[in-house]
Image (cartoon, rainbow, N blue to C red):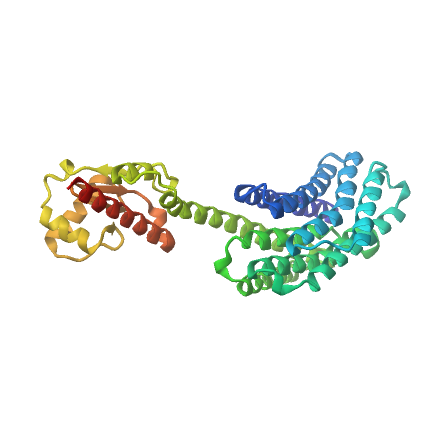
Length: 402
């Protein structure tokens, strides 16, 4: 029973690490795959993915040859970390360090072809020493960096990488010493998930660096407490306690990674409204508004012409849109029963959550159905900016026609 639980937990952690790395890769590619830092980061992410892919394939197929992937990736990871550290710090490591890490990576990568354990544990101990050396060198470069030469965001990235290395070193050592430490599973997947979550969180700078570290401590603490409680209730042994904590912590970080990646994607889409404003290639208000309809957040927006408003009182409409150029179903202006009837008619006629004044002469409205905006204050503000720009275009057009 314990053996089956060990295998399943190991498989779960490895699959979770693969998922976290895949999400991080998607985030980096969506941002800019050719950015120098992102290219270095992607190299490290893909090498680490190869390691966990090898573990998953070994567990699922029992084919020992997949150990080549694990050993090859483990050999190259210190080099990938050093390359990323150099890019983040905008400085080169000392030449002897480059030669040592680069040469070691090549040597151990070549040894991975001999996937049999006949040259172990000597190779494993040597590879562990090489990995620890690589991580410590990168940590030393981070610690001795010139903080004044980096921006606040760059320093935050470096600190998060250093924290990930600090957490990863003992986990990696435990992986190599699994047979000698008495640990039930390899825990390095947890370090990888923490790195993925910290890296994705950099795209949400408004959350704050300190808040992120507090959240990290809270998730780790919650996993330890809940895992210990479950193990106590189920009367599990030491191995059961460790695996319970690892499984819970893994689940928490996977959920956090997926949630943050989704939130980041929504924020990027929201910012697309400002991008639409900044890159507009027309000064005609109607062309500008029609282009807006192609944006994912406002897809399906309806242009309401003046003829479609013939049954409504112009004076009442003037009063409504003077008070609120962007009407929100969730918070309409209170202007009396007649105005309330007009507002209700507009929302119900076009199944809209927002109605925006696009042009004043002739009057053109834009009816939008965007429930997600009600939970995004920044997107609400961006929509008001777009409306203001359309109104300015309309005024300019009217003066030109005169």
